[in-house]
Amino acid sequence: MAGAQSSRSRELDAVRRPARHTVYVWEWPVRIVHWAIVFALLVLSLTGYYIHDPFLGGAGTTGRPGFTMGEIRFIHEATGFVFIAAVVLRVNWAFVGNRYAHWRALVPLTRAQRRALRDMIGFYALVRRSPPRANGHNPLAAAAYLFVYAGFIVTILTGLGLFAWLLRRPPWTTLFSWTWSVMSIPELRLVHFLLLFVYIAFALLHIYTSILIDVEDRNGELSSIITGYKANLLEGETPRDDPSRTQA
Image: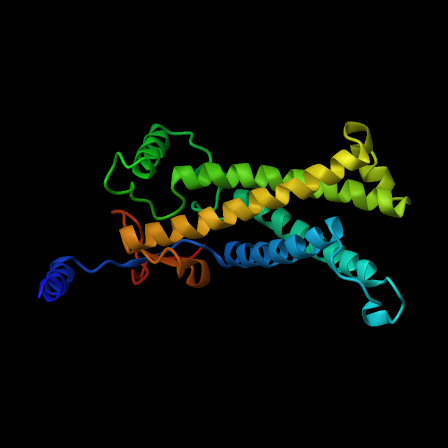
């Protein structure tokens, strides 16, 4: 009986709540980069862990004994260049993309952004009952992305340093042998490997918070990374069905 009343109450709330327009938030390059990085990190994590701790033997597909490591390393390196391309594209889009993807949306420069950052921390600390409204990244998520992308840069540099050390020929040694003077090869390997667990932890937290915000705001947080659209939570945003709307 109580369940039926609760369901009826939710239906009435939905009727009273005004319909929300959708707003175009994530442009197609942002969505492609997101999924390219997801795919690349998954492959790099699996192959990277194998390179760290080879738990398979055999001849691989070549038929040559012991060549499984060579094949795994090749997959790791090829996927690494896909990862580098995706990160470079996203960094570039932070300067040429729309306001939701722009670097100004990621750095808490304004008083409103800093207030929203405090409010978001308060929400996760159970001080606030609801998160601050935002159509793009909330400031806390944006700060997390800046931290993760800093990690991506370190991963790329340590990976290219190890790649140059393996090949021992220009232009790789010319461009990246300087990493050997910053850290020894074992240290490069260790940093490169340990960042794997940072990304695993971030991925789990990212999935959890995306589901949480989607449930709290009912704004299409999860589907937006596929469609590009979110329910418009803010006044003044150009709705999807506005004739004057132009997609960046």
